[in-house]
Length: 382
Image 1: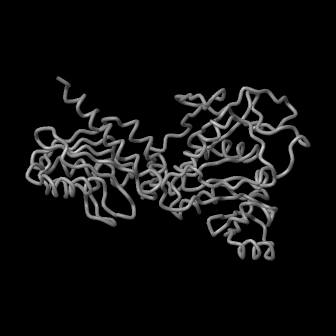
Image 2 (image 1 turned 30 degrees about the vertical axis):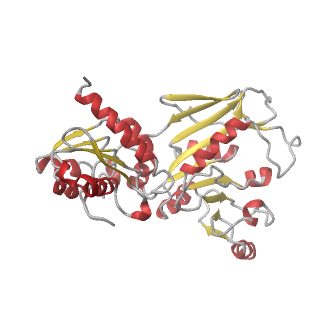
Image 3 (image 1 turned 60 degrees about the vertical axis):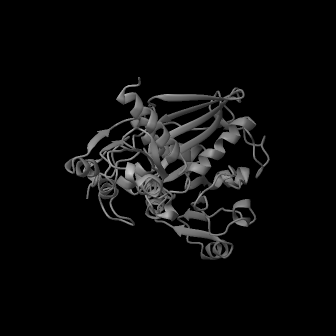
């Protein structure tokens, strides 16, 4: 016979599967899944959050249960991947829906990362006489909503830095050995395919203008997976060197935003006419201020930002402490010191925590969290 804890893990894993269905379509809300069992331990309702349908996962699961097995709700258990809300936003409190339905036990994977509401949902359930359990499969649940955790506290996106490099840390051949505005592939086709799910999970992808000039990328989401809003393509271009005939401009439909410090009105007007949104920011050492750009993206509900930048921006983002997670694809080749480096000199080494390693043909993928977005920052409480 499985123990209660083992049963909780089993059903929370199912709730996590449901939550993952919301990736790409719940932002700027979190992706949440819920499973409801009757008092005999049988599934009577499942649900997950989909932004455009409004209902939170708990309410979606309760509606299924009420439609088919309403009499069996009393005394049941709800498994939910995020602490049920106890406030009214676009919808009413999920805590009250669970209490009214007669559920007697609620198991949540993790608390709400919003420091203003964290714990209030479980407290309300406990005060109403329900048994509450918190922390089952917590790490997996938190991984799904890293972007929400960063954004809800700081109104900035979670920054995932993607780098494809050689064993000796090079991202492109030496100058003169690479044709301008043509992609140069460091990694295998399998590794490049693994980038598409990263774009699918992101709300926006960012490059510097040097990458545009070197590779002329599309920066589109080619995963084929469902998403609620188009992938926002972001370019950092201090001097407005963006070519008007590049792929990003030719395919722009106001899903391309360019940050600059230039006040070249003629170029700005022409880019705007072609569907590129241009934002002029105050210069910082002559360049686009990265914190200000992140603040603007966060103000527009961008939760997850994928960087596919070059040497200077990779270094600036790391040196500025702006990167939350790194995903490095390493190809088993050596280019030598004349080739373009992934990073310039840093004042201090960047320390990684737990490292995840995957293999893509002969390439390796190395992923690690640099900053925990779930750590509650007292300064974020307002």
